[in-house]
Length: 403
Image 1 (cartoon, helix red, strand yellow):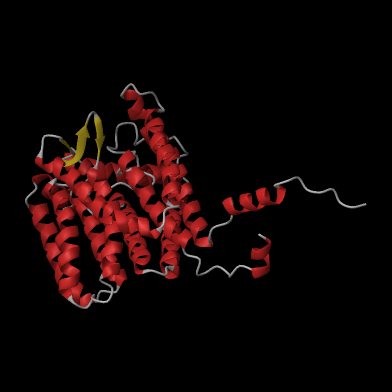
Image 2: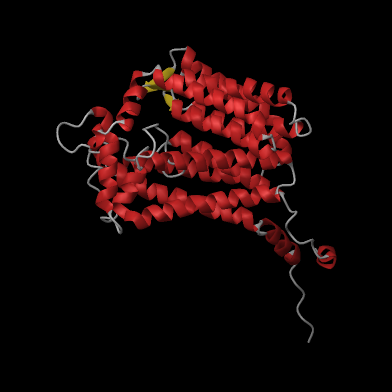
């Protein structure tokens, strides 16, 4: 008995669905899966670390989670939308994005719209909406550096073709953030510049002088700020390790962060059972959220977080290795230096290796602007991973004809 004919349009429907849900590359899903894990883990830790402060601020125990969750619900779909954009799009928006974000940062430091917090003027308040333009500059630099260095790929041995655009334009954007007083963010942005140049193939001898100038500028900026000098001198002295006497304001945060980590031990005190978050540790849901992770989840929880950032770096490196264009390689490298470098700095501060710099833990710490821009940056890298088919096997011509 002959088989019943298929309904009209049946095969085409199956083929179209297959195209929609076609697996991207392994690199794509490695980066996407690691990012989703860190965002979800971050929401859990933001809930735990912010519940007390949210309740005291009449926002309820879930106030911090709801706010961060709103940005995650916006950022994750936005990341997926960005991941569908072609390489040509990023070439077109490179200059406009850098100019617009730099102009917004100029408004922060040159007008009354800038909002200061913690000794830094790094926020912009327009119509009751408050955000950080410096975070947008990071994304713009990632795109712009990939575009400009791909155009200069045959002239990277000539310092004029490297230093004038990168440090003249990109350095100017970093300078605007420095004027606002946010040295930690400015250091991360400087790392993006040098990381892009290094992975683009610029020789180390050309980078030596700018690195020395950058280190000197950071030292000068630290010395002219009484707030920074107090934190640095407290870090260099042994006063913050003394257990007797009154604790100074500059020692309060790093000391209670250390106590929170020590209280966690190997297995932690249990999720939600932190003592430091009861108004003992400032910025428990932001800059010092790693201390809460260590207290509640112990050494094992800290190792898991470190392992996920190592996996994230591995995904970036694989995408860089498979990149077929200089722009994709450089922009991916810039995002990697940004996210992994910032995570390293944040964790080093909590562990007492660095003085307090005020940078959040990417994808985990509370902060809407930082979460959105980080997810957009990862979406850009996902667009490169999705667009690169060099590592995939060629399609079978017979199957292609059937389709």
